[in-house]
Image (cartoon, rainbow, N blue to C red; front, side, top):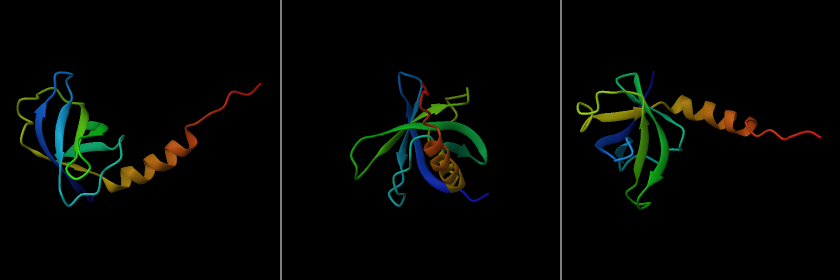
Length: 97
């Protein structure tokens, strides 16, 4: 599985999400991407925050031991982005009368 570097976990917010400083060489990722640490799913990007030139990602964690995750590098899978875009196009349903 090929992974792309997302960035480094800086800290946990009061809401329980962890904040990731996005790598400078990385294009801004889309919300909804799964975040990995050594091929293990650790969270999902909910929103991008901060300035466009130096953004941060707010990630909802899937894991419990939070104190050991601060400072680690996290990755995303570019294949997940392809599946997400196809899914989001088909997710809108209309009510038929």
